[in-house]
Image 1 (cartoon, rainbow, N blue to C red):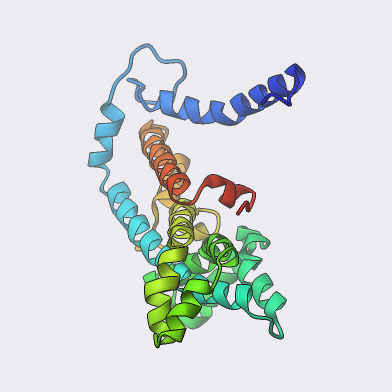
Image 2: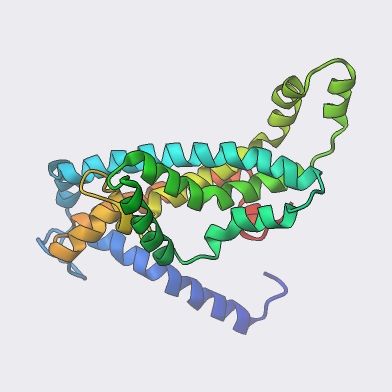
Length: 264
C-alpha cells in the first residue's frame, strides 16, 4: 500500500466499489418488504428468506447442488493427486500434453462444453442422469484441484518419504503416512475451491440439466426468467455468504495467494 500513490489508491478503491456494488444491491434487495424486486425500499423484512421454505423446488435443487459439489470435488481430487505427483516428480513423454489436457476446461468456453455434452448425452442416452452430470462437473473442476495440489507437491522435499522407504515402508504406506499429510493443506484447499466452482456452475449445467437434475443456480436462472419476486435475491445472498465462508476456510487452509497468483 505504501508504494501506491493517491491516484492508484483512488483507482483501486473505485474499482473495488464497482465490483462489490452489485453484490451489495442483491443483499439489500433480499430484505425488501415488497412483493417485487425494488431498490431502494421503505422497510426491511425477512419474508423472502422465510419464503424459501415454501419453495420446495429450490430446496431440492440446493441439496442436489450440495451432493453434486461434494461428489465432483472428491472425484476431481482423486484425479488431481496422482496427476500432480506424476507431473511434478517425473519427466516423461506427453507430460506437457497431460498438463494441458487437465487444465483445458479453463480455456474452453463453458457454452461450447455445454452444447458438446448435451449432444454427447443424447447419443449415449444419459440425458437426465445424475452420474453424467457428476462426471461433467468433475471434469470442469479438476484444474482448480490440480493447481493447488501441484503447488503443494512441487514445493515438497522428498527426504521424509525416502527415509520411510529406506526403513521398509511400502510406496502406499509412505504415501499414506508421510506424503499425504504433508500435501494435505494443498489437497484440502483444492477440494474446497473445486466444490465452490461446482456449486456455482450454471453456464454449462443449463445445457445438460433436466427437471430431475436441476441445480440451484439453474433453478434460480429459470425463476428469474418467470418471476420477479425477491426470493432469488435472498437465495443469492445465502450463496454469497456461503461462498465467502468457504473462501475464508480456503484462505486459512492454504492461502488465497496460492490460488490467485500461484505463490508457493
